Length: 157
Image (cartoon, rainbow, N blue to C red):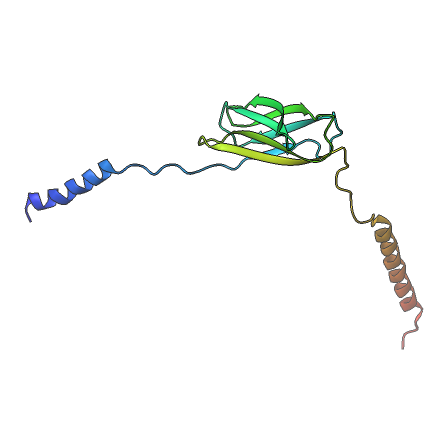
C-alpha cells in the first residue's frame, strides 16, 4: 500500500466534513402561562405568569375574542415574566387570556389560560369523610374490646 492510496480516502472524508453543515437546532423548550385566580371578578386583577419565551423579548397579553390588550411586558434573561393585569369590567363568562411573544428559537409562541370571569372556581366535590372515619375507628376499637372481654369470660375447657 502506498501513501497515495491512504491519503485519497482521508482527503475525501476531510472534504465531506468541511462541507457538511450542522443540523439546525429544532429544540423548542415548552412554555407555560398561568393566572393567580382562574375566576376573577369583572374589573378584578390577576397575576399572569409565563415562561418559555425568548430572553429579553416582549410578550403581549390579551383577553377575549376581541383580543383586548391587557399588557405588554418584557421577559427576563430566562425568558419568563410575571405581571398584574386588570380584567375589563365588561367581560363575563369563559374568556381566553393569551400571551403572545417569541419562543427561544425565534418563532411566534402563543400560550393561553382560560378564565371564568365573574364565576366561581370549580366546586369541591365529594363529602367530608372525617366523621365516618372516626365512627369507623370507634366501632373497631369497641368491637376489639368486646372480643377480648368475651374471651376472658369463656371458661377454659
